[in-house]
Image 1 (tube, protein in one colour):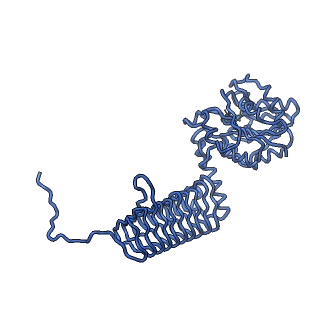
Image 2: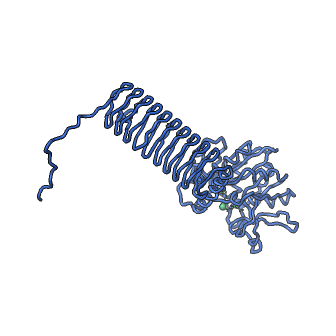
Image 3: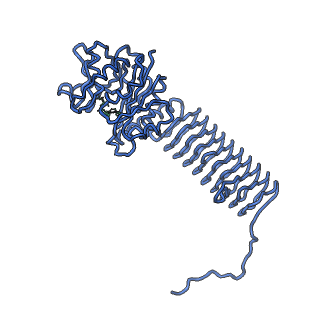
Length: 454
Ligand code: UD1
Ligand code: MG
């Protein structure tokens, strides 16, 4: 196949977003619009990707700095043809150039592949719309061949009746494109250099103009305002939900799922309503996720049950665990198999060993907890002295009584027991009971104070 260049036009202002952020940096499914287009373009393995940016200054290249694409500024913005001209110095003549749009995020590589296979010449991606208002119309001759594209503002009443419209996405031989672009004028209703004018030039030179339709309408939906953004977000989430269900995932309600990244599911996974998955999340076989849980960059082992309202961030959870409701795993947490982490338990940068339990109202930070440890309600690892963080080590089979403070750095030995209500500041020996508590006394005859007269 001929070498491919991709140019992504993304210089437009996005006035109707009413935002200080360039339009193409607004997120759909947790990812900037233009990054969706870049990711899809990369699947085609092109020789070069150029992103034409302009409005919003350096914000677009800065946000996309991880991409080795070429970022070309268009200043001022004089139309789509002018935008493409800015990229031409970076494209080689022995290639094809594919034009994509930074605000048309959901174009799929299969559709672009169909365009690549359409034949030599100019390939336009078009759609038929019940309401074509606002779009450039595809004008066909008597033989049904494409003659030109006419913009809404320049169209005659008859042309306005045409329902086949230009999506903007096109594929052209680069050398021809360079020649046509150099001849563009701006003598039209908007005083802009229209990319679409190259179609009539191709026809004049008897270059074949092919048309291809996208596999789905939503692939060519552009975003101009927050309503369109939200609508396309829902369409995309329904697509993701559909794919998951096809793979056998049980979704309590496919309309109440948000995947902002990548989710990989094993067999017999069940996800209740209102869950949000961000970054890369892997759920092994038989995992059940309770309602309104938020899980980001995490792996969950097989058979683990996550009760509602649990938050997991950059953590690993082993198989057959029970988490939540209302548990919070912060970055750097590793929970081994068969552990139980209950309500209002927060864990950060810690390892919890096999079969250990922290079931109620606890903070475990910067800690290494062994296997079969029982951590009583209200236990706190005091990991921060105001300047530095210190580690707490709790060895296998230790039992931490309720309402204990473990002032780090500190080690609780294997099989040690800590009496409830203790403040532990020194290492505690293995196998022994340690407690730090003043003796209980009863003050005989003590009276509660009574309210004084005003
Ligand atoms: C364009 C097409 C129209 C098509 C429609 C599909 C032209 C002349 N018209 O019209 O046939 O039906 O898209 O949505 O091409 N951009 C730049 N620099 C500029 C102008 C635009 O980078 O100077 C970018 C915008 O950021 C946007 C895209 O090009 O991503 C399209 O621009 P827009 O102004 O929306 O073109 P339309 O008038 O909608
Ligand atoms: Mg537009």
